[in-house]
Amino acid sequence: MNIRIIQDEHNSTIEAIIRNCLIEFGGNRAGLAWEDESLSHLSDYYSQEGREYWVAFDADGKMLGGCGIAEFGSPSERICELQKMYLLPEARGTGIAANLLETALRFATQFYKACYLETLQNMQAANRFYEKYGFEKLKAPLAGSDHFACDAWYIREL
Image 1 (tube, helix red, strand yellow):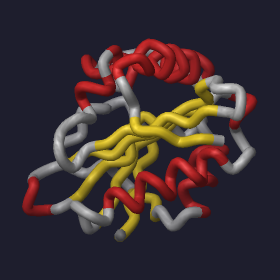
Image 2 (tube, one colour; image 1 turned 90 degrees about the vertical axis):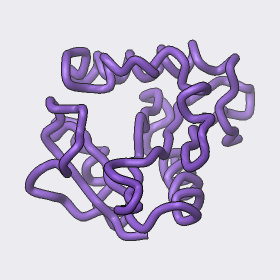
Image 3 (cartoon, one colour; image 1 turned 180 degrees about the horizontal axis):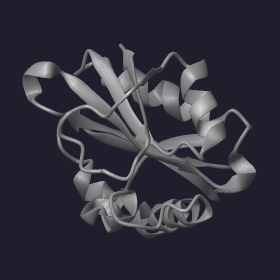
């Protein structure tokens, strides 16, 4: 497995992976990443300081998924958000998600003091994964969220 920072040529493949995962879990609707304007050009969105997106590939060069870090809320809060962490079904449960998360959190510690994320309750394996890696479940979203349809929220001190 190989993890790389996203490049322009990765945009369409990771967009397809994300959209297919959203469809799989009923997330192809308003208030979720499905409608994010940045979805078709993630390499541009994550090119600013304090943001990064990584894509994972198997030994044959097939993209398996990815995840990103970007600021959340006001800069003075120093909170980032783990964003768009999606993997192909065959990559789940293989350790790739843990490697992506480790990469993302290592990056995040350079800029932020806490990492927030939003997801769906019906993504049960993902929810268990986040709790396993030290994210604490919140009762409500943090102020400033654009994803009003999410129904599970987590935070982790860095």
